Amino acid sequence: MAGTGIKRAAILTGGGDSSGINDFIRAAVILMEKQGISVRGVKNSYRGLINGELIDLNSRIVDGIQNTGGTIIGTSRTNCYKIEGAVEKIIKTIEAEKLDVLICVGGNDTLGIANRLYEEEKIKIIGVPQTIDNDLMETDYSIGFHTAVENIVKCTNMFMSSAMSHEREMLVEVMGRDSGFLALNSAIVLGADYLMIPEFAIDIEKISDYIVKKRNAGKKYGLFIVAEGVQIQGAKQIQDDIDTFGHKKLGGITYHIAELVNEKTNLKPNVVVLGYTQRGGRPCPYDAYLSSLFAKGVAENIADGNFGKMVAVVNQKPVNVRIADAVREIRLVSKEDYEFALSLGNIYA
Ligand code: F6P
Image (cartoon, rainbow, N blue to C red; front, side):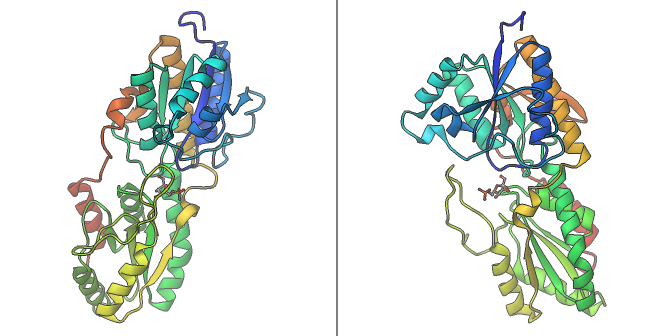
């Protein structure tokens, strides 16, 4: 690129995959190529950067990857700041590959590392928000979130007819780690009876009473959306597995909630843990569109020599924010939004 001297770029995708990443890769490669930049793809996030595993990307290679799930260059939860000598190896790879800019696509973990590499190692970096958890600050949406909500809604609709026919209470667990956005949006769309999210600890007594009241009032089936990171009032967290990045592995708390509710109601609530079905499949049109918009932002930032920024969308407009601001803390659901979702469902309380 004439103005800024950027000739070689690499794209890296990290953390949990989602739908829309490939659309971003395709659009970014096409737009960078038009600026005369050659593009490499880092295999499996920071692991590939440590080990020097990169592949060529060009507009012919990425032709046809749009509208597919996952990431064609792979991902991992490798934390280079937890591996001795890894950051030095990353710097060596960047020098050996003659990379002028690194485009990091991911959530808090991936972009947290990206920010350190930018601030401490002075590597030119542009961030792209991608996480079904939608928990990055400074952007209304991240790639993958809307598709995950759509997947939750579609899957849940598939079994709610059965729940109605059998007069069952369904406890549906969704992902989201420590933020309740996936659960909140899905609960609103599905008209769920109740919403349980990490931001507000749940009271088993209250939920059980609600179920009984609801059934007595004539509604003999129910839908309860449970975020995997929810806390039960007065109980200790039960999950203690750790992932490779260093986070607690979540998933399965809903079985415990169902047991506790059953002790109070004897209604044997059913549990469905949606798991990875949420993260996969064809991206919804909004995610595919957002990805292309973010690719445009990345290409413009390269042309302007604007680094250390994350492309974002705020009030439906593309903007740039500091990566440091996007990862300063985890974005959480507000009390107001939680109460709004509850007010739409909790009608028998
Ligand atoms: O951060 C995205 C996410 O899907 C979380 O919602 C979930 O807790 C986690 O990743 C699952 O991680 P893994 O793919 O390592 O099981």
